Amino acid sequence: MHDPNIPSLSIIIPVGPGDVAWRGLVEQLSQLASRPQLLLVFADGDAQSNDVPDHCVALSAPAGRAHQLNAGITAADGQWLWLLHADSRLQPDTWPALREYLASMPRALGWFRLAFADDGPWPMAFNALGANLRARWLSLPFGDQGFVLHRDDAARLGPFDPALAYGEDHAMVWRARRIGLPLRCVGGTLSTSARKYAEQGWLRTTARHLRLTAAQAKQESRRT
Image (cartoon, rainbow, N blue to C red; front, side, top):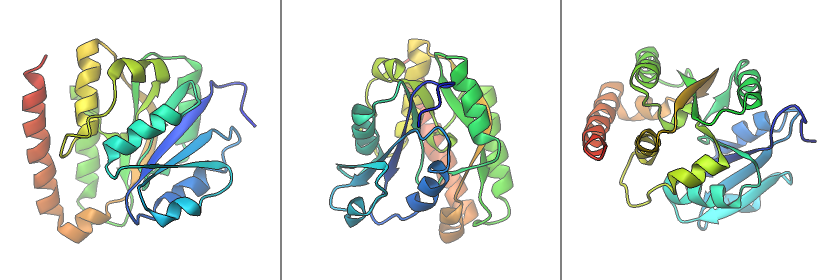
């Protein structure tokens, strides 16, 4: 049943081909008293789309986070949208912070503090620190920090760009800055998996992310 103390909320979770991480996240979200709308957006042809809990909405879209996020936003019923990665996990302060944030009816692009799960190498604490400082000092949060926004502001921002090879979330932040939509920390913490750093190497993965982020930031800054 919907919690009358917060506005209606749709949670959109793109699921990559064969990725089963969404199951743990849905289990967490299903325990929320508010029971927000849960939309799982699977890549076309993913057989998992036939195996979701009854209280979830299963959608299909071309593979790629931009396509899948756009499909979820189009289908969402909520006044507010929460965009999560499939491997995101709620922490004890996540939902209380979000409830308080939505009650204030902010017209902003909200983001959470980032933490990494213990499935990666030990230097991930530095990555989390860097991500949180970047978000707070430079107003450049990324998608794994759980964007929250009003559906009217999502319409103002326009769809995610599926033509981008990477960084569709980063590009959205730059669009928010260009239209004057404030970026605001929700206050709680989201954790995300660090397994790709373990699989691909911490130094190599971190360096690649820094290089791609710097290149995209340079390109986007020229549009302002």
